[in-house]
Length: 476
Image (cartoon, rainbow, N blue to C red; front, top):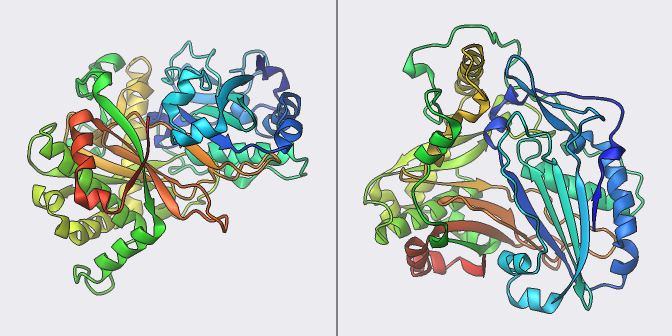
């Protein structure tokens, strides 16, 4: 059964221009499952009626998810909240003959859930003029045979990043338990504008040196042509998505090895995320070259960086102002496991190199260029930008470490999720989520979402440096 929730739209309207940061470059839907073990409280606390009521309460407090995209005359985009024309959030529920034990035995595989229609079709999240029909939020609850439940949720990343999505699910769960809680700061439209008083009417600089290497733009091609140009021609059947796990204990040991290697100079340091990025980048690049998917040569390595941190802006609130902090790695850096400390140091140095001045200049270029495209009559200018490192024709590998997002906090009254599962279709771009909580309710592992072409995935599975610390949780 499907329920449209649009009639719960608050009367107050809010708007926020997408072009405040790089958020508009992430136009896709991010799906996720949260799995709940059998519990007698599922029937009472997670009934369709109760979940619908509490979802209404949560949505009323967080109108962003009830908004719709509006394209203005000057080509800017805002999230408008017009009760007459909302992107209706949807809520569905069903029962299945699949049991919790069967799910668990298959590693909670995403494809198994698909075969039992526990997910929803993933729409094209690209912003277009006629996108009024696209919901900002879609939820589907499946009740498992013999007990247990799965909650599938999907938001458009251009409105809600992963942290905000899981914060919303946790907030919905609190509303479901009847807690009189205020809207978490992670869900509030806090102003995190990287630039203020930007002159949107100034001329575009023709000096190529003004454009940041990490961001590309092309107004001479249609968006579909750009998509083809930056996408490696590979059959979908050859792409293998897997989930791997690494324990936090093993990651600490790797970090200690880097610190004891003598590679770091006085005063230098590396984070656990830098070390994990270096490990993943080494193994993924090595697998691609050994399998002859990519030619032997240097690689671009990147770690996703939240620009709010170096700019001294609040880290809370909506939005995802990230940039891909790039560094160059020689073939030697990725082929030789003993070069892990050097690569981890290089990743750290690349992150530190993104100074406030550089980031402001990059955003100034983006805003000025965007305004120029709109002024010159380029249709849908927001679809002409992309991160250069996500061009899959290049030798690029990177990591987005999201190990602090509250993916396991949504307790609707029947216990916290025992497992979560998402889907990362982009090759060579690894997403890191926290693993399930341990006995102390603190996660003791990280889950890495890795998608590679089949020959490269086979090579990764045969890499002793990878298999010594990483364990396969499930295939897609």
